[in-house]
Amino acid sequence: MVDKLPNESCDDIKHIIQYYFDITSAIKILTQCLKLNSKQIKDIHSVRLRMEKTHEKEIYILNAKSNGLFLRQEYECKISKELSQNIIKNLKIIGKIEKERYMFFNSGYKFEFDIYKNKNFITCEVEVKNNENYINIIKILTKKFNLNVKDVTMDEKYKNYNLTGENVYE
Image 1 (cartoon, helix red, strand yellow):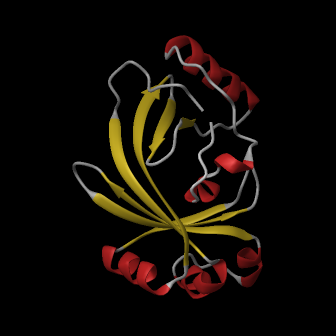
Image 2 (cartoon, rainbow, N blue to C red):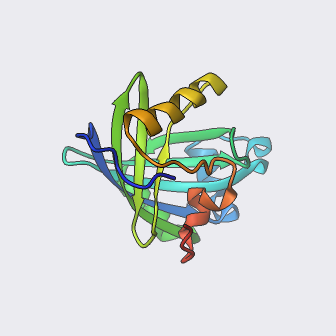
């Protein structure tokens, strides 16, 4: 979590809506679109449809993730608008979030800052390969971007899947 956006021009902005689905209702779509087998499906913790809008385009991504905090198996594929509408109409929706994503590229990293609709905080996500990268990320956030940072990587309540409810975390 961070206290504000960096005080510099961002590289891109996306409006994101994410729907989360009951896994049992999504088994057919997981096998057809994501080509998952029964063992992979057994390990799935969340199934999500993300709709991303920028000023240039709109894309739809079907995603499934295994359980975990720091490291998780993830499967995804782009799908058509028509298929996304069909999925929303026919699968059991268990949650939805809306957010604005501001992206900043710095020192070879992509920083994704999310401002959630109806929430009272901002998160920043950066994909890292090892602990050294993690230390560099914290330095960039605190020193270069001049932000106050609270690491919530290992806090399950800040996973997007869990933010679909009405709870406001601070």
